[in-house]
Length: 162
Image 1 (tube, helix red, strand yellow):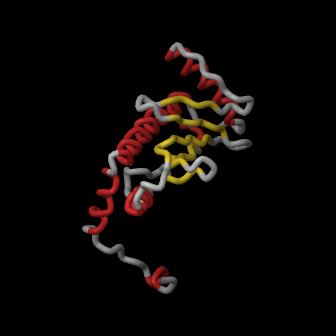
Image 2 (tube, one colour):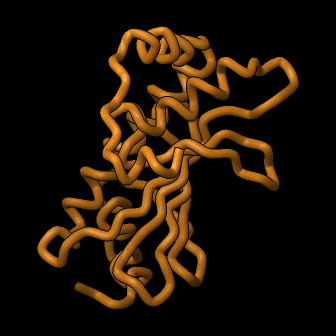
Image 3 (spheres, helix red, strand yellow):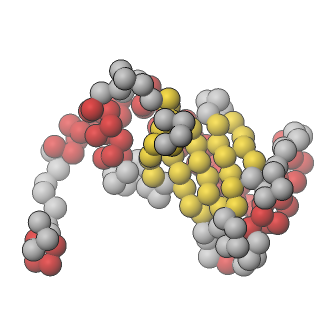
């Protein structure tokens, strides 16, 4: 696996440019951004000194009209299999924007351009789907679904901390 993710990422940018017939501007560190089909920004950044990338997708601006139920549903989405995992939903503190973030640190055999492109496509679809569920407030239905789930069984070790 390459120790310099930025170098690999620049090579993959070239593959994307060739495949799509576009020009992508990257920073000296190798970071670049794209837009999803739903017009959501995705930032791709190499992790300095590690064979890993961070993908960040913009989901929604925040404002005073967002309910506590919406924020509870976003927290629930982080632990519902297939909803956000292995990514996580959070708040970009400086911009007050809801984001989806993924750290991609694959095994050496998976550190390939093809795997990156598949990941990027899936991440873009996930960003668009979550952004749509947030905009329509459909994501709040997670709270009702969670109420119907059985209580998780906690081990004795966990019980002593509660």
